Image (cartoon, rainbow over all chains, first blue to last red; front, side, top):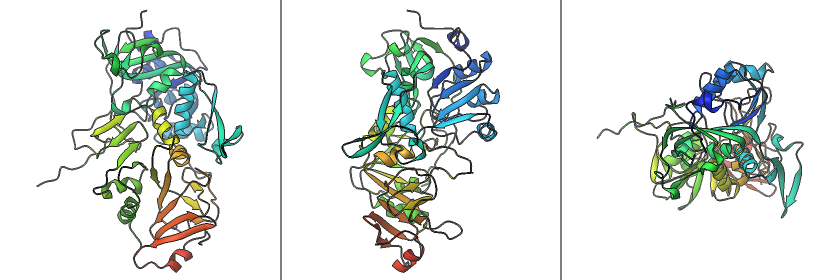
Length: 234
Length: 207
């Protein structure tokens, strides 16, 4: 069981194909698999569909794949921070499927758990529910949403042991576990790979069963909205 | 005098009770955190955090620690982190007592529109649809009229909905209105604003 690869390009070798569905972790620019996204850009693979909460910014995150026209469709909840995205979308060059954020997360989790569909009250009575099956339970109406079964998951964690057992850090966890679960193959990048036995087994956030390939690298971890308060002067 | 942004936030904070878990939206709702006083309120950030602290001091920003508006924030002693599916599990599952959100339009039956204007740039609904469908109480903080003076409190929403029949309370610059059977009930008026002023600025049925 060798999961550790030398770099992002090697970790993606033999996996990438045109037209594939990729589930990506991250919220905004926080906890995104930035090394794997860069390697996907270098590979030149195209017509990709991404299930990802956001689309990055123009020059970071999934935004770098929009610049190179490698993305065909986004399944996201919010794409407001990306000018190139908006340009391509308005020009009809890029397809967008808006999902309520919790529905997107649950679609990934469901896919990873072998659940092809689930009913939720989120979006009932809105555009999101149009054309979807509705069903009443205990007097309340719910809408059917489908699990996401991705061809590939790309995620980022803080630390992992050599078997892929991993720990996320603060709000960088976000979509990474559900995205990791829903792919046929999951490639994970971390800031540090530690020897088996050095993580407390009771403190593992996601077991390595979901992780097939693993790389360690240096991350830029860009901040999207730097917001601070002033120290009160006495 | 109608309420300003901070006064609306201060009024909204009065709706929160000790021990509540609460989600605050972007904009005026964020200011509500400044007015909770001694009440023990735990703020949820839907990107995966309970127990959200204030903005960091300069130099203490952490790229791994942001709120749902992607701003750098801080943690507290009580803070717990979790993934997005669990975060929306607690929202959809009714564990969050209240959400305070902004709105473009609210209708007298509690319909809420706050995510898209047809023909304009659509950025997405983010977590708003999940929040209004799932939390215990939806409190909307908004200006009563738009910049042209037209009412934003309507008989029916004209914009695409975020949720149907989801709003419980409206706190506007003119006062507080509760969604009840048959329309809206005026609960309170801002200082020197009369009920007639509110009626004049409201298209919705006031009961």
